[in-house]
Image (cartoon, rainbow, N blue to C red; front, side):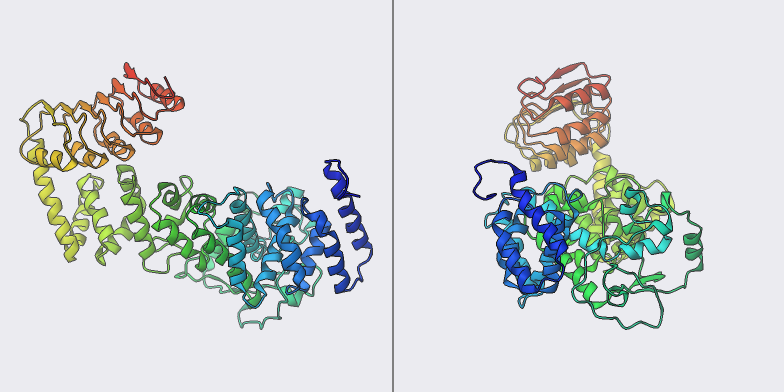
Length: 579
């Protein structure tokens, strides 16, 4: 009746599923064959409907007990595909997420193992370069993170005896009110052999015997101070169980090591490998980086994912390597030498710095952050001959980032200790001498470059004499790009700059905004600048005339600039969204 009814009412299709859920609850002694017959019978109802929670539990049980059943492939696959494509919030339907996790683990139990899982992920993405279903990636990431977290949740709660996040939401604050969370069940776990150190059993479920599902945590009580602090920490409030606080432990300190049984490690490996697969899709990588940015997790298998982010030239991808907000560590901090996740002497950290410096982060703000927080690691890697770090130290000296004379001398000694460092430091000294000559008082006050001039032409011209008096520079209708900003910031007296109809972009604007504080007139008409670069102009308080005609300026950015630039009197926003 439900399948043949012309009425388009979701309750008509859900009613038979709820009836079957009730019947299954009342008949718990059915055979495996009966289970398969029931699943095949209700398959047509699941084509356009999510299974209800009780039915999800029934499907989970079948995936655990008979992972190689053809029902898993033939019936469950379209159901899981529909869940991943259309589900909007696993928080409202946690058993849908558990069913998806159990289904993936069942695929992993087949002979081909991860190859089957890889084909499933590829089928969810589709054969084209762009996945047509926007919900697939967030749902897959949610499933993977929940599976990884579930293997550690009991351990996290046991450290400070705090209730789980789910219990807090449900109002269970007392120890005797606590209920075990709903974790991802392990596939036929084997009783582990206890190591000689202290063993803390972490029960993952109430129904199976505790010996078959405990997660072993080996504690080495070598740091009495850390233990005392842990005991002194208040329960609840700031001591809320946190995955990062509990798992980010420096190998050098080695006060806490987590030893999981083989089956639990296999669960972790399975879902970590799925995250690795997701990072290989170019169209998914920006969103994946954004989803993983606030929750850095130092599982060894995820290092590949972070490397993929560090190799991606797109700013929206590699910018997620930085912390999501001030005071919170991101991947960039965790993988720096001495960081809790660094296991490669800083190689990954150096590649992160390289991609960030090659992007639009070659600014004083980024260099100041490195000088304040990561100067030691930068000097260490420069001492080992890393070219990116040598460049970083040279830029710190060139932009006067380091004010302490002793620190400056130490940086110079570090640079002179390697051949690449000595060569780049000598080049820096040459540039500094040229800069002093360039900024020496004298030369013209106005200068106009011929049309079709390039960045190289401008650099060649400015290296030919003194331009300390130059106040007005016109580069209109030339072929200069953002790269010429490196030359423009050397002009201390510059007050008027005309970039009309050039290829000068956002990266150049960011650099100008940090160095040309005296600039009063700026013409950006018909340039490819966007809000990302125009917002940086808010720090140029001396601006009184700004031409943004025919740019990608939006109304919100225009209002923001007007509020932050008190001296701005003459503005041209024609042929923009703000017009």
